[in-house]
Image (cartoon, rainbow, N blue to C red; front, side, top):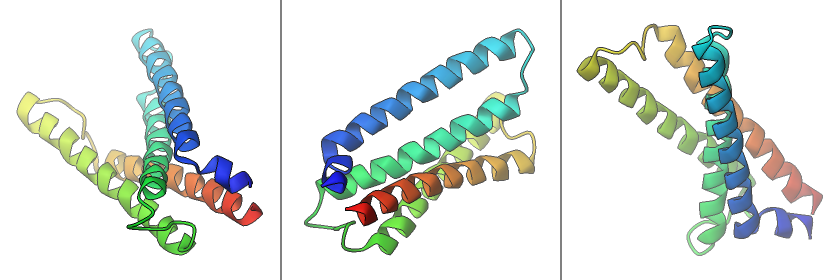
Length: 142
């Protein structure tokens, strides 16, 4: 019963909205503290990438719940786990290409170092991993 409630498309949509609001709060707080010079960009960037990874995994589960004719995530938990991680990693890599494009076109310093890219991708995947754990735990509890 719990997994029906937790992974109904409406609940997942609500979860997406909640993560989006948290992401907005972290972003606005980060901009404020960065403007006054009291916080390092790394901490805010990692939190945002973690939340984005969780959000993207929730998007994957939402799409899987909406398209039961194509893919049943409940029947194939391991495939859903790998699919959510792969989906998140793909979007994360595309985002890093976008940041690289900004550097090239506008001479920004989005990709100042290789380590930043790896940290961003790791935070994306870590957020997706934790959302996967929540998903699997809810499925097994029902």
